[in-house]
Structures are given as C-alpha cells and as structure tokens.
Image (cartoon, rainbow, N blue to C red):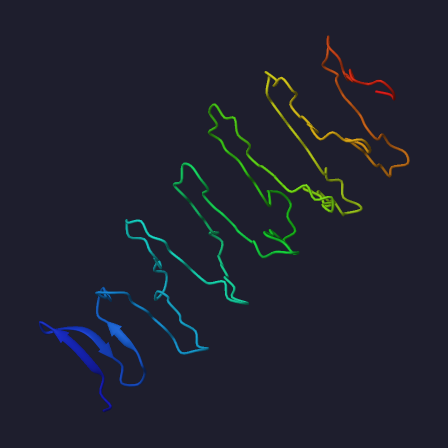
Length: 239
C-alpha cells in the first residue's frame, strides 16, 4: 500500500522501508550481521555505492584481527581509482621483515609499472622523496635497482635522467655526503665487475662549445691527491 513499512522491537523502531523508493533506513546505530558469508550486489551494469552521510569516516576491515582485504580483480579492463583531497593518501605497515608495499605488473611487455606525474607549476618541494631518519648500524641499500638476465638483446637503460628544458638551469644529478669518516672505497663508487673486451666503462658526451666538460674542485686539500688514477694491470694503452 502507500504506507511505509516499519520494523519495531520492544516498541522501538529499528528499520523503516520507504513507501516511495527501495530505501531501508536504520534508526540510530545500525548493524547488519550474517551467520555466514554476506554479499551486496547491484544489478549488472549498475553501480554499487557505499558512503557515509556527510563527513563520517568509512571503515573497511578495521576490526583488530588478521585478515586479507581484497579490492578489485584482474579481469580485462578492470581499473582501480584512488582519489584524494588536500589531506593526501596515506599507506602504513607494521611489517618488520619482508615487503611492506608490493606492486606487481608481470603482464607488462611495454609501458610503465609506476608513473608519478604533476602538471602543477612547482616552485619547490619534491615529486618523489625516499628517506629514513632513524638509521642505526645500517648496511643495506635505501634504493635498489636490479635487473637480471644476460640476454645480448638487453640494450636499454636501468636509470635514465632527462632534463629536456632547453633554457632550464637545473642540475640533472646532485650528490651530497656530509660524512667525515669516508668509506674505504669512496663516497661515490662505480664498480664495473664485468670483464669487457671493448667499449668504455665511463663516458661523457658534451655538446658545449665554450665551457668545461669536467671540473674537479679540491680547494680544501692541504695534502693528498686531487685526482688519482690506478691501472696496475695495464700492459698497453693509456691510463
């Protein structure tokens, strides 16, 4: 009939079914519980929306027991979109060993595994920052790039840094180290362990016409060596 449907227990209204729409409204704090698994489905091609009525938080899987929380699937063009306002997106983990965050893209043959972009006219800040401010007896690697497979057709680049602004005065690569007790093998080390029979281990191609290709400033040295070259195994050629 044209009247709403009201569910009451102990004379208290618990649920109301609208008389003009398929709307079920709980009175006060509302809990839906199942004695087995529970599924919420919309019709094929129709959206399923879960939201709070205003600024209330939306919590998924927040009870204090271990579980796997799965969002999305890998079928065809399925996509996962995360949108955020000015408060940003935060991901945290209590993992002490293993992997805290993993991104797997095993189907890629071309394209990109992870892209960070910004069209904002930045005047400062960092688009990507990796840091640890609590190192103690550390002997690992903060950022590790690794590629395996000795195929002769591997002719790409493990790390590419491209500054394509013709009038830009940005440095392409900057390293600062404030240690006073330098490591045995140098503050910056290039270690080429492959036994090559041709080509160069280090090459600089400079298109400048009136500038310096390389400059070494050791103005604080009172003893020592500004540049040392060692080629103990050399039998022919020039160090």
